[in-house]
Image (tube, rainbow, N blue to C red; front, side, top):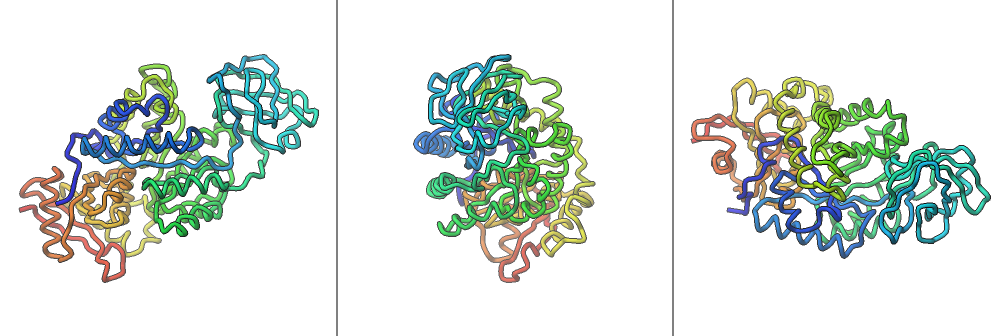
Length: 483
């Protein structure tokens, strides 16, 4: 017998997964523990902020807490990527005042409320009078009024708080930065050395942008799945190639996407990106400003609740909290609200339509056909659960792509696989060693269904697996009555 989730975790019966960003508001171990209990499935570490030492401390705390309370969670490392960012603000957060005149400089100086440093030598060449500059996910808007070749003057059209390393967006302007920097590759080494479960690659524009990370992982002998963050219009245009190349799935990163494209297009893009991930049986995270008002308020707005529910209706695997848990005043409450919204929405999802149409039938291989048959059988035969013995997690992901309404119990010998499956809709991953002898495997799966609360004696369950010696992927499906 291997280790398993022995605690009572809210996420065990919720199908939609919750990703929460760790920051100053949440890196205290007591808060991390409360967030796990409230329902976090995956923690996101944003490498654009903080140093390796502080992130390593958080990783160790998360792993120690998970071990102690027997609730495994995944950890996602998010690479900074080729994003323009403001420099350091030693005084913390400053207020960029509406109507004020500010100076944007490429010099390496400390920032002030009227001086915004940006480490980009081409700054003055790229900007011209009347250009729009967005800061901090678009919450601050500047209009360029002058450019003398060494610095840029701008009027603050929309003000707001600004702190170190917040992003700068220039819609329609190419920064010329490499898709993956040497700094990004150093973070890849950090992710591998510290056994994180996913890597997110920022500002992907085309499938080839993922190659430097894939090559670095190969060099390090690692198969950590990579998630492509879709936040540029070029990426939205090339999403099929990107989804195909991204080993771990995609993230609909609406913050920068909503600046780079007209706001009115974001809802349509969100639906099409989630649909594309489903067609390739890849996980998808919907992110940014989902409960933004909860950075300072205990309750979300009705519009935010609807926004989260809409992403779930669209078919997302996971919903993500960013500032709400990184710097917000109510990180634990934000997780609880996400959990409540997901549970309330999941009773009304179009499961049957997803079974028939989410993965294109004309492109199905053996794995897709077998797993779809199992999910259909779950409805027609009133099965109580689908049990999936899996080493890598692939079979469980393919089953989940068809969105069964019954629980998917993924049984694996690997804690790493368990943590990675924490991102996948409808999958409850547990660790338990399995025999390789087929008949014994079937009975052990039935025992596991009872042991982990997915079924009871006399229930019918589906068992779906891939027999490695056949080299066909997922090729076993049996209906089994639990003894």
